[in-house]
Image (tube, rainbow, N blue to C red; front, side, top):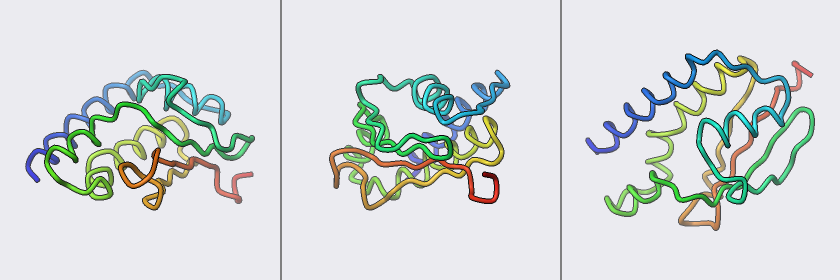
Length: 128
């Protein structure tokens, strides 16, 4: 578990440094570009866009994931590892991009249990 804590703090440091750029998003297309392609450094080919409209972005990612690799090596469930290591930092970065954004990860659709990891980022209905 100590390795997960170290990974969490390293990812948080990376997130904090990226947020110093002061970038903001106004559209879901901006989220796709700044969060998935820029911050997470994913290749466009690894990010399947399930839904993209003016209020919501749903993706399914199939990238080479270091957290998945670490989880498999340590025999730690990815549902725990992702919740501990990456979810708080993803929320932090998205909050810095736009304070109203809501981030949800589907733990029913996460690797290695599924072919990709599904996430939903949206503006709450009261902000529409």
